[in-house]
Image (cartoon, rainbow, N blue to C red; front, top):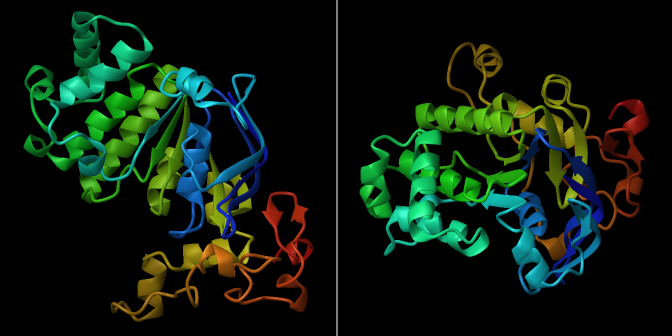
Amino acid sequence: MIEAAALTVDMGAGQAVREASFVIAPGDRIGIVGESGCGKTMLGLALMGMVPDAGHVSGSLMIDGIQMVGAGEVTWQRLRARRVAMIFQEPMAALNPIKRVGETVMEPMMVHLGLGRDAARARALELFREVGIPDPEARLRQFPHEISGGQRQRVLIALALACDPGVLIADEPTTALDANVALRVTQLLVGLAARRTMGLVFISHDLAAVARATERVMVMYGGDIVERGATDEVLAQPRHPYTRGLLSARPSSGNMRATGGRRGRLPTIPGSVPPLAELAPGCRFAGRCPVELKVCNGARPPRQGNMICHRAEEGA
């Protein structure tokens, strides 16, 4: 169980995560979406106690009843991998290129669970089978460059599951995978969460994958959770201007019909996510929002239900 209240990550130049509050219970499947630079990965790192040294974390973060804001590395080491684990982006970069993948998966079990080498190897073999790696005996002895991208991603999933975490954070788990492999990896994560009654935090740019993998979604912009709710409801009827912009930019049959069936330019959100030091002190989306008010730049918008917006009462 993870309970965050006003969780903030200040990087000096600005707040990469601003007063995030949420609960992740056993079996919950939560998506986090937004453009690059919106704070998704930094929020995931905060849940792992892995914020860069320049960052300062404040607010409250309870993991299984233990307050982790201000906790030392020894306390984090006791919980990391055992209670909360993370699948990092880019499997080839996350795996040690000079270590056999079996050794990589065995290591946390030997360190955190105290398993002997034979027991850790047997457990790694079991995990390889669980995540669907073919010929697992042979794969244990191979190096990362000797297996496919999809298999490397499955090795990372096995590594994250090695110590039976209560919550698994998957940071862009389908990046650089072709559509079929990405679909199978997404289905695998959903199945694992269900079988293990494990919380799943699915961080992704891929809204279709988020729709398949999650029950609830949080939309982030500039470190703020600007909209949240049931995944199917938010994706079907987005209320925040930023969420609507993200969804309108997706390729769809509607886009094709609007251009007479031709490949036309997709709608875009003007501009780009500004650096932390240049984010507006009020609404972080100010300057890019199509329905912006004068008050948006200077005053932080109130939270009205599941949305942060000065136009929340109007339905934005």
